[in-house]
Length: 635
Image (spheres, rainbow, N blue to C red):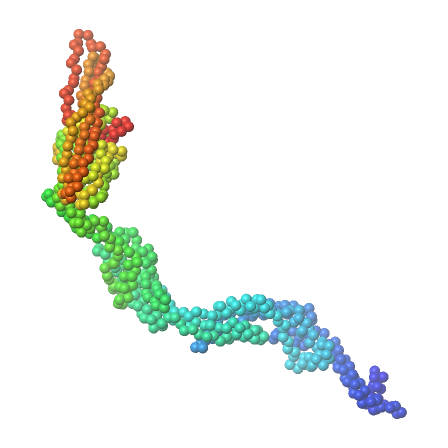
């Protein structure tokens, strides 16, 4: 140090006597070096007195003075976590004041504190290699303190992804407003303009805001797009809604009524948008759910067909009646009309007759009239003894077929129309033929109706689709021109091939059954029947019956001849056409059945004469019944 002082004096021209003074430049250099050394020594002294972070140092506003380096690292770690959650608020502002706000955090935007570099930056304050800078920081520590900023870094990929999403979220389409109805409260959301912003502007302003410490506030200019809706129209719609929920609504149908309280009306109402236009509507599905089964049944009625019937020998047409179905779409529209037409006092319902779907009957009065059923075109009657159980079956068949109307081209099958003959269906026991022998079964006797029906259709000129004569001839019926029935395989079926409607009318007395065909006379019918041919005598069958007296016998069934016969129908149509149809049928010979007891008679008793009744065409059953593999009901 002494040598340095001597050198300094020489440089300053203050050397010892006899010593020459140094040049000027050397003097100045030495002075500068001395100053630097002095400052360095001063800084070293300060650092020795201040081993931690300079006193009074703040980092992003937080006091960190005096902390050792390890503790400083912990503080910066905590600060990094805290600042990652600091808010960033972006506000898009339109020309007329419309705004859109988006909130995020610095971490979501992609910004983070570089902890290591930040610690290094703070720790180096007062420890710089440049003694002037270091001394300046120490002097600042004596004054207002040292202010430090954290070192921040931006993840560009994360920032790009965030800015894209923020741009899409801040941009808004224009809205047309809305109407909400809660109970009886109507609230209006007015139309709002749309906003359009530039993404580059958003990014630039956000980056500028991130340079500041604390929560970042970003304001981005936006171009406004006018709203789609008309506020005045929406307000008028709100007025309609307020009228609608001002009280109850009652929609009536004859004695029934659909009643809705003001709250129920409000729950059903909604706004139906058609582009920019809005209208008040009611939810048809919800209204349909509100109508329970009992109310629906009370509101709805089935259509009634026009009835064509005979009265005092004249054709009478009972007029048809339209039906009514509850239609939720129609009712929903009517509800809105009635509810918005006028306001209620809160208690008095607005009323109207319920609109719905009118259902037309299958046959209207006009349809019935167009069928042209005006006169009797054919009729046929067969007779039977009174009081037999089979008569009930014949008359039950007549009741079920009476009044059937066939339009031109329609068909009728007796089996399909009547169905199985059962006791539950109103039928009882009657005569049938099984294996050539007369027996009884449920439904026996209905073939007499089938024969009567067949002959009425035969002479009416209508097309015969299906029929089958009995296996054994029964004398009360025309030879060949008759029919038997068995459900479901033996049927009588016809088709109305006339240009007019066909009404089938039946009538009966205790001893007869009549079937008549009514329409418009359209054909003349000529009937021919051939004589019998290939006549065969009945076979004789013997059966043992121990219940008879020994050596006696009894005729159970007298038997009838079998034969073949043909029957022809010639049709002379009024339009000049002609047709001829011939059917041929072979009757099997009905066996003669004799029961006997072949045991020897008691001694001294004469053999009795056999009990053989005369053949009686009207005795027993008068119908064919099921062969084991062929027939059925037998009537």
